[in-house]
Image (cartoon, rainbow, N blue to C red; front, side, top):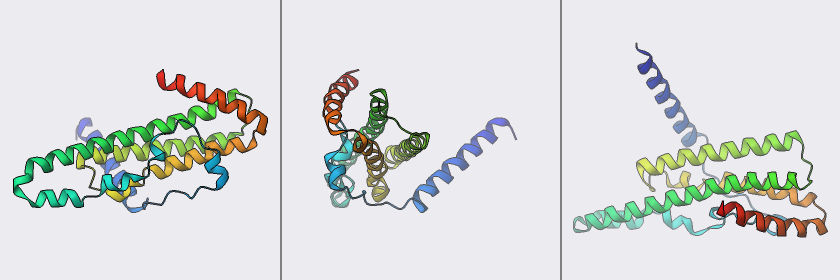
Length: 196
């Protein structure tokens, strides 16, 4: 066998294993319940995790009704394309939120907050897992559409929300007077980061 065939087969096996892992072992979970302090200490600038009405984005009832009417075939195709585009935008927003949580951690450390290696490793692993999950869901939506694995795709916000809670949890260790100053600096930093 040529090296190209071996690489192709290996890549295919890895993709199939990742897909099976996502379907079989990562059952869609509910978003973690937020305590009052977690709601109060959220990371300013997160966009896609705060949107709650995305259940209707992945609900295929309207699509099935349109598909059942042959005269609405063009409308059905446009409906599916639009839903796919919106789902991809939402997943892209979640990826940006993961990067923003990492930026928030870096911001806190630069401003004097001490963190342990274990905390850094935990946030790095959680961030990598979230990005891998989002990349897999992006691939599913791009190739199969937004209705293929709707429950699993909807659950894409769960690892991002958990990462956000971990990042915001560091604020509890900051003294209250310094917390207000950090909030002002972070708001300016987020605006500059989003424009940059």
